[in-house]
Length: 164
Image 1 (cartoon, rainbow, N blue to C red):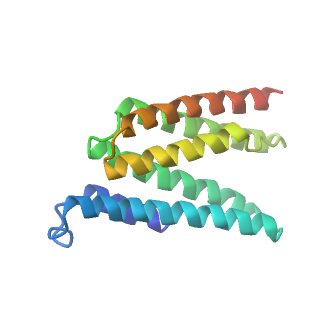
Image 2: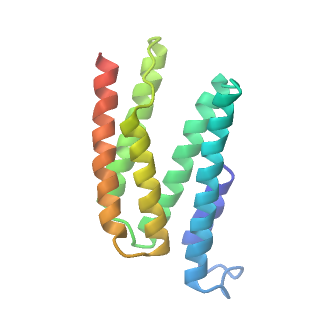
């Protein structure tokens, strides 16, 4: 959670006097590095919690929230830099908030809508797209739209799982 604002700052506040002497390509690199560090620590946090059977209700709430904050900061920063299609980001964020609401509703009904393989693939596809977009690499836009396709598909799977 703490790294999302730092990454966002590196993406959108490039006129800040503290960043003025840093070339834009380095700002891209540092923002991408912060994103990768946050993503890797999130993965290991979940892995360790499951391995040591230390899963808590608070962790179950904060982990997805931290994921959403990181992705929201990345996507907003990339739209700000005009590197990501606002339509693609709208689709992704709409799905994320809708599925989060669906999971809260399911929990209130005593149901569990657990993660699916397509949801994990969606997350990886989004992370790869974000990395390419931050670094302004070729095929970044195509990767973003591939991530959108996985995002829609996994969202439909969650909806189907909820109604089963």
